[in-house]
Length: 628
Ligand code: ADP
Ligand code: MG
Image (tube, rainbow, N blue to C red; front, side, top):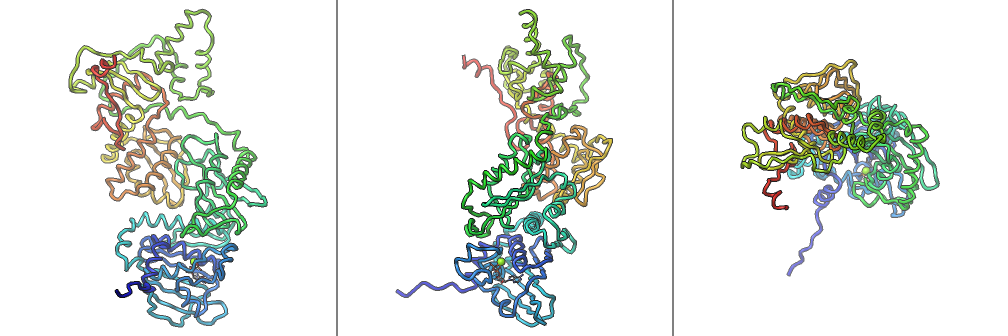
């Protein structure tokens, strides 16, 4: 039998290697920016067209290359950065594999122009699919310009795999941010489709962060500084009150290289323990300087994960230095963990306006009690002190004690898991859950709140257990969809316009859904230049909820980029419904419970949340009977 093993031709080997280095346009951006930094540039321009699908160009004023180097730079394993394996342990450059340019040239049309300062003329090289098309002398400024056009032109499967322009552009901007944040002493500019996206002057770390994330960021930053033999830690953490629902602004840099580390992230969270509201994440921009010998950046092809020699010590130092800073800058003591009670007050059920009001006189009405019972889980807040005292004061005699207990129970704040106040209607059994008169009938049913989470009520066939938060999500979702499509939402005018700052990227995401947001009742005075100014908001939310709601929305928009305006509307309604819906843990008064139940069953699809989770379960009398 003849021999069958062959060496792969270079261009095929390069294409295969390219798969590791270049996943999408942003990978090219990262490699080119890093090469410019390694070449000691002081100004770096990034120019992209169509989210990098047609063009990624990086122009720098760095060292440039000689004629021979220019040609060699596209060979695999061609690098000026290491000579022997030992050099790997003394790395001070971004690149060292000598793979990037060879890989990129295998899967795109590449044009390089470069000139060293001392040379009079520069070199121009054109390569397509690893093949040199032209090499000539050219006039060009000192430094290097590399154009990468038509990425994946020869690998249609990869090209088709690319996401929409907005997704790819987001990846590019993320990469640009990471590199720019690690090198504030370099001036960076970015252009997309001919217009400037970022212009970041050379400055310091703090200003660089502020330039990227908007002017309001400055006041949110708490500096950290720690110098030990093992590591120097500098940078900033965001004040706890500005923590966001999305993990957006979390950055670690090791020796000015962006890295991801779940372990170190855990250390930061540990430092913030007890200072954050539920489900929020702190921002951080943390720069670690360590001896290059003590890390191994070789373990990941795109080098965002690294291995530290002494991870545990690093963890401890990071956590304690952040704790120290939070304490020193007096961040911790001024925190107010009280929940805003307006979060918990259910809104008006607009859709129920046709129902004539029923006037009931509650002889036990006590305004203090009323207010307090809408306060959430917290029992030590200043807002409900009078109520607490009223409840806890020992009564003079046992009769009084008993009375107190009774009234507590009627407000369903105690004995929540007791079923004693649930009434079952057992006389009639019908197969239908709700007939035409079902909704009306529910008005007179007794509802009961269980564990501040479920609303229990009776139906003809037995019992219904409704998840309060999910039910409210459904109600809000349908209401929002209707408002958005019919543009008939009412908005409440704010006394003072609300000003919020966002990154350019976030502003772009918000402007995509601006119209839909306006249809829900938002009135925007301004939505550009990193700032949002809002003068009107939907009637069913409060001013203090706005920034949370927009954060959540931005997170959702980022995770799941909608491709049609229909899915955009749907996503928006889902996101807003989720952030505004009453949560588990909120006490609902009887009327509120009944309103919710009625509104739920007035919905087109009361069975499931917009995310397809079941909203209620039923238990028939038969089933209950079987249990006895
Ligand atoms: P690596 O960065 O791992 O060395 P690359 O394929 O990215 O490998 O680059 C190969 C070589 O080309 C580099 O080592 C460097 O000498 C040269 N080079 C690449 N880009 C530039 C640039 N912008 N300015 C000067 N030299 C460059
Ligand atoms: Mg490189």
